[in-house]
Length: 87
Image (cartoon, rainbow, N blue to C red; front, side, top):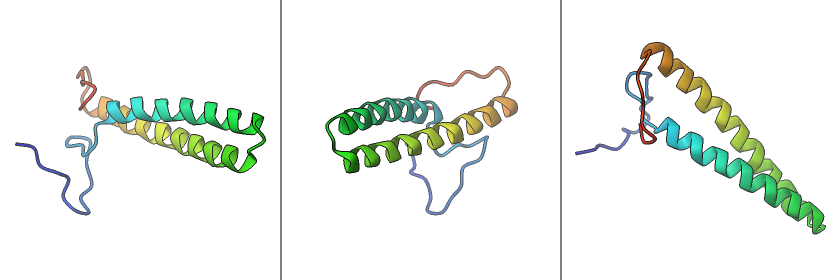
């Protein structure tokens, strides 16, 4: 039985509340797609849409940095442990 994250609860290195590897894959996908859409929007003279897509690409980059920092902290706490995509 899985429980959802308690309200206002913060995960720790030992008990994470998000699947970091899955978040990493999704953020990478979002970065690539939003960058492509931004370029296509700017080429189609839709500057407002290009700016929105570029903003979301920047958000994906920030998310990637945060995820990598959390994964590094987890590796320091659990050296040699292998985690699946959903852990």
